[in-house]
Structures are given as C-alpha cells and as structure tokens.
Image 1 (cartoon, chains in turn brown, green, orange, red):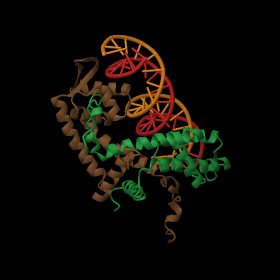
Image 2: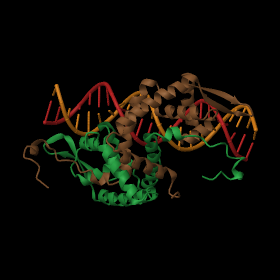
Image 3: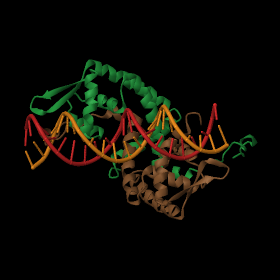
Image 4: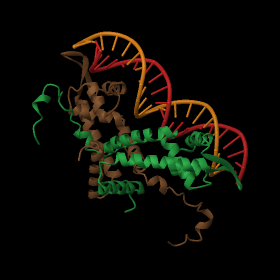
Length: 159
Length: 159
DNA sequence: TATTGTTATACTCTATAACTATA
DNA sequence: TATAGTTATAGAGTATAACAATA
C-alpha cells in the first residue's frame, strides 16, 4: 500500500471507513436496491405510474379476472393498501372493477385496452431502465444475481 | 414436470401468473430485500436498534470523531434525518456529541464503551440473521450475489 | 457566501384495526 | 364464523425548505 499523495493531506478529510457495514450483504442489498428504485421511479413517473401500480397493472393484465385479495397476495402487500392503487388505475381508465357472478363480495379486475397498451409502454420503459441500471454487470454476473435472488425468494427449504 | 395432484384440483384457485413481474431483476431485488429487511428488523428490535441506528453506530464506532454531515453522507441519507437517529443513540448512552475544537459548527461523534459493546452484540445478532437469511445460498452463490451488488454500487464506469 | 446542525413539514410506504356486505 | 373490499389511522422512511450559528 502506497502512502496517500501529499496533495491530499489538506483537503482529504480522511476517508470514512465503511467496511464494517459493507461486510453485511443485507446492507449492500439496501444500497443497491435504493439506486435501482430511484431510477425506476424516474422511468415510470412520466407514464403516471408508481412502482406498485406498475406491478399491479402487469399482474392484472396477465391474469384477467383476478380479485383484489389475490392481487394483494401476489404482490405481498396488504389488502387494504391495494385499494387506492386500484382506484388510481381505474380512474386512469387502465382497468375495470366488476362484480364476480357467483360471489358478490369479490371484484374481478381486468385491464382495458388502454391498460394493455400502457402495460406494453411501461414494460419497454422499465426494460430500458434495467439496461441502464445493470449495465455494469456482465451477462454472467446479471444471471448470477437473478438466480441468487430467486433462490432467496424460494426460501431456505428448496434446494 | 409432473401434473399437480388431483387433490389440488378443487381448491387450487388457479395459480397466478407473475412471470411478467419476476422477469424484472429490480422486482426480485425488492422482494428479496423485503424478506431480509423483515428478518433484520426482528433481529435488532430486542436490542433497541433500528436498521439506520445500527448502521450509524457501526460507522461512528469505526470512525471516532466523525461529524453528522459526514455520517449522513456515508449512509446516503439527508443531514436532517440523521438528527433524530443520533438523538436516540445519544440518549441511550451509546455515543457522545462533542464540539470540534477548531470548528464550532461541527459535532464530533464518538461511541461510548456501552456503544462499542452494543456494536459488538448487534453485529453478532446481525451475523446470525444473515446466516439464517442466506442459508439457501451456496458459498459461491453468496459470493456472486455480494460481488454483483458491489459492482452495482461502484457504478457503471468502474469495470 | 457556504457549511453544520436543527426544526418543521410533507409525502410515500407499510401495518393494523374495524366496519360492511356478503358467504 | 369466515371472506372481500373498504376506511381510517399510525408508524416508519425519506425529501425539501428554512433558520441560527459559524466559517
């Protein structure tokens, strides 16, 4: 290890040692996700979508007739918190809420034509965002990241 | 792939297709981090620490005399938001705020003896938490995850 | 004029409890 | 009794603006 150059003595306030924190994988996940999240927010904002409404739109588009409870369960958010998300998507004309014939409690969600188009447009925007965010990774690194995350999500009792 | 067992026919409401969402690495990061975050919260709660106060305690312990601004910068949070975190750690007797001799604006933060002990105890708890959370990964997978995250944090112009 | 710590504020995200209408 | 949707609310986390003291 070389000494720091003399020029750095006056203004280099001494680098902060954050190695203790970065030793934890969870902390790295937090910081990395924070970067991705910020860029995604920027990518979706012009479309009038937030992360959760984007996620909901995709699930509804791919699962016509899904109920709010099932949607909430799929997104791992509370039933009560999905309401305003669906409200916004419905008011934007991107999906419809209809009574289920044989269960008048449940509401069947379906993407409208505008919703399907928005889904496609948003997916293209998010794909571009991911290309930007993960550009520092090689294909192999990206694949390794994706499969490690999948393994975590599958749980400890799965291989 | 085997067919699902007949017993599942009646109650299996039809599996939800969430492949469109999981195609996005960012979504996997969100879900995986959410799991880790919840477990970490549980691990730190008995010690009276939150994630941000744990992080702050580590940085202060490893960087005696650091100012609040430098700490906030290191943790990538706003200066204004670090105040209550430091307040809590100070009131818990885990660190001290002292005037810096040649700059009466700045406050030098130092961990107390109790703070250093709490840091050690909390680190052991978090290490146990990470062992639990990442138990599904092989050593190689965990390393790949850590290095991919480090690459993301280093930015696109560093490889 | 710029920086450090601070306060106030607001907005998002998330979690819980409780209500209604159905089943 | 349990479920689906809803409302209200409270707690974190986060971001901005503005101020006093100091440089």
